[in-house]
Image: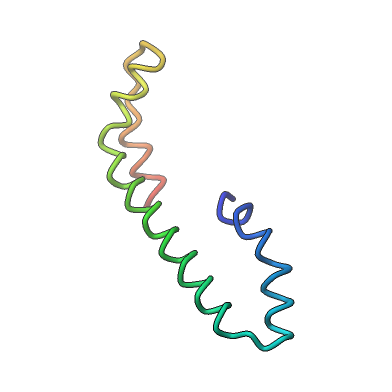
Length: 74
């Protein structure tokens, strides 16, 4: 869902540049977005081991979410 929200502003620009045949900008932008999303996935995966501590700090309760977080990934 977050990726869809992030890509909406690019839709009009992609359409206009596709019609103008500006492939250079399209390739550059798509590469940048893919690199950004890849980095976001890496950060999320790196933070997964710390999710239990974050919830405990946030709520004050011992919530075991590690099992659910890994199930959501796979």
